[in-house]
Image (spheres, rainbow, N blue to C red):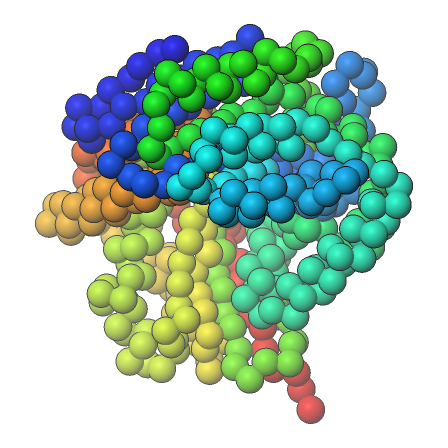
Length: 428
């Protein structure tokens, strides 16, 4: 077991890669009463085309299968695993993103039993034809519920307007039609390929003894047998750097319009600049669009936005995008105002004073995030799957330069990587 200390943050992380390839990260926080565990596979909704383990032919599986698999793992032949956690007073959950699927719990008691349950239920799949068909109805209802939500539709509508072919434009849950094609055999194919320990990470943060916890996880994994896993071959369609559509409009039964502007970036290289870009994108969006910023005040005073106005940036292995917008009475005016302001970024120079303030704010956000067990373990896993150390975000932030910020800003946006998506009230 390797011990890594971070003197600046006063944090210690214990790590070990087990014989089956599982990467274990333990973040003891003895001052906490709670423990949080998250077991994550490097497999998300965009992983639709791949070569299954021990096979040679490439396959493409139906949209939404990673999310479907997440649902099915909780259901066993004789019980629902949620009940096992509930009986011990633990809270359990799971989520599927574009790039990963995670299973998690938090508890203040019986932590070791809950860790074993977490490992065992994820590593013991049970799928039957009957239960798969039953789940289709449940997930179809979930998809239809989200289809009625303007915020959800505007998010994926913006992605669809940005991307030509990349599966990031597809709803994580798939569609009501696509999930009908999912079979028990498809689920086992995806499970056996992507849920191999060598493709997974478990992170535990909270009140526990690291030696005892590592031995518990080590013993649990030694009692199980897995086939060797070579590198998983995934494929993605060629994606142009330009957006698919500069503007799209959707009519929905809403009382107020929505206007979102998306910034698409090309496929990301996983190198030293990745974390810098990740940080700079967040810091610059915060600088321009936070409620304390002058542009937010300008849009608000022109009655172009309300409190729903927001922004976000996502940067992963082979895609990156940012989305800005919210409710508006004047979707075309807001779109033009945002686009005009974005185009001005090519010539803007952030001042030293503003940059120092941006770094201080980001440092505060990072330190606040490290006070949350859930955020710390989740973010630690996120960056490990990308090949980075979460605790290096702080020193990386400190090393950011004004020149790097202005270079990133001046080359971030151009006319062909910006798209607009609007939701407007249905006519008549």
